[in-house]
Image (cartoon, rainbow, N blue to C red):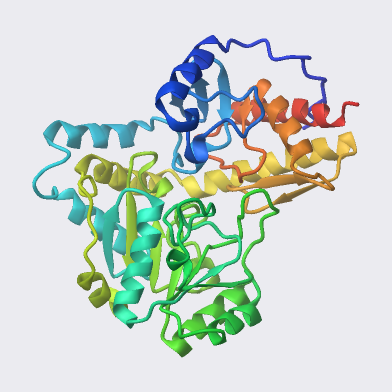
Length: 417
């Protein structure tokens, strides 16, 4: 399949008036006009800030412009937007009740389903966001081991709490006093980090390296096994941050295919197909630590999202979603690499098929990546110049063809003098 490179229009002719007015209003009532990872101001100027709708693998901004979605809400949408079975389950529970004086029965059903699905899990606890889950894992590990120090990979993202946020405004030295660092896929650096200070309560690690703006790096199975052995040797918890990857690479923990089981794992994003839900899964070894800590939230026990989680996990299995994402991700990679070669553009296309990212050789400050992303977006596919992308199980051949037509325009923008 060949996707011709075509020069994009000189400027974006699509409607933008509703988005522009919402931005104006937001600047008056929201600090900076928007905040966090969905703040569009660091993106190329043509990117919309506000979205209106999503169905399957397509999304629409507030001005009605349509895109093939290659960000999937930065990961939560795994089955496609507005999956009928998930939405029906959430709505049915919401019609009974959502936020109550005690959890609904579905919390037990969801915990049982997760324990049956994820090999290392003997128990489950629930929250709302990935930061909740990673912070709970760290807290449980400290409670269980009576230690304070936590080791994380340099450059890794584990959430926005003071102990792990990548931006230090408002963070004190005390917040980071018990954090040590190692290099991903470098076992000697993990051993060195252990030796450099008091014995750690936990080593926190992502299933693969997906630092923002850099080429991705799959885990070396020997490294994963080595980290497991080091944790066992020093009595630390191995915490797998599966918030971004969970249920996208494998229907279970993302390190099950390499034969390594964590003690604790953090989950969110895809486990409820866009409904607000996070989970901590753990082995019996850390059950007592989980019982000791006090962690809670007014909306952590809301039932509708848990019903969506049950429906999502069942649909992932019934619909072969992990295999579908891999298949479409492989096709997307093949098409884009063909386009890059035809244009004479050197790129690095890294990461697993369902969670790819592409960089341009010699691209300083993501100038080429931004030009590529902006032209791709103008041509009808939404991706990010500095964050890994996501393929959903809802992507069809028509979606793929449209996405590749858009990336062809993206390469033409980079190639154009």
